[in-house]
Image (cartoon, rainbow, N blue to C red; front, side):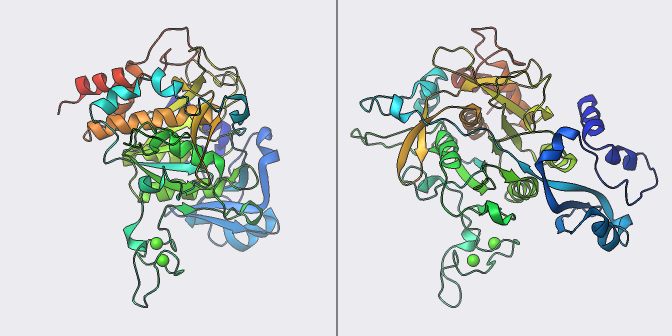
Length: 427
Ligand SMILES: [Ca+2]
Ligand SMILES: [Ca+2]
């Protein structure tokens, strides 16, 4: 609670005032934000949070015009208002393919380091779990991902006119989204519009769920997902700007809740600027959804220099930093004795990329999906486990070989985490 109030104090005094029953005014509904947030403001775009729970995007020529036209007449119906912003996303992983010998294309040191095959040998593969990858566009046609997508049956097959429901521009299942047969792309900001699959989201999805090939004869470029029988719900909001908008991130989170996912992977982040984003992520706990965030790639202590969502520190959140092949923390990785919870492999990680490709990338964006995949294994093994039991099993079973600067002082170990969840939750 203390963290929440600190956060609210920093992000949105208006929220706190409203909660204390102060008179609402056309000025008090505006969330205050730190000066560091100002550069990310998208001019003329406002996120309006209504008392009935809706969140809408409103455009206005100026703040005064918004007040006169919308806020003043409907003041009692409005909870608060904030500027839409650009969430910069994490610096994109560096492609290292050229630095790695083509003769060892599927180097999977990360999977070995977390002892993933211990789970697979027991048949524990993430069955029955769904993970939202809120990121850039996932390549849903990648041969190692196509079977792992959480397709929406209500937007599949033929409609009454014999047209393919996937592309008929009709919301066939009436869930408010047209043709959302394979997740959805949330691009409300025209310059950010993306249509082609992107390397970042595709790589993250593959670390979690890339299908395993049973054949002894494998493609040279074969990778293995940590939870190869889990399903990925691709929710794209990071586009050509190299980031995404706050409003689109909020809508993607809402969609993930609507579809009842088990885990959200958030390999993105930036400045602390939004009370509404904090509220949405906080609310995930009541839906029994785990929120996994990348710690960030600036090599800094986020206890002192917080980045968000990494540093929200909600009880259903796990923030992940990176280790390299040596087992030591990677130079790029953010850390924090309170706000980072665990480390996982995040250097030279091979995974899927668009158009049937595979590449090695580096960053906490790669470490977070290791933890998401591990949670899918635990959840698949003990479907009745609560969010707090899953988180506890993961964080109590870490390898503490080095003096890691995170709350568990450890790094991911899948084998030990599985033993831990068996201790916590009986069959
Ligand atoms: Ca629909
Ligand atoms: Ca349709």
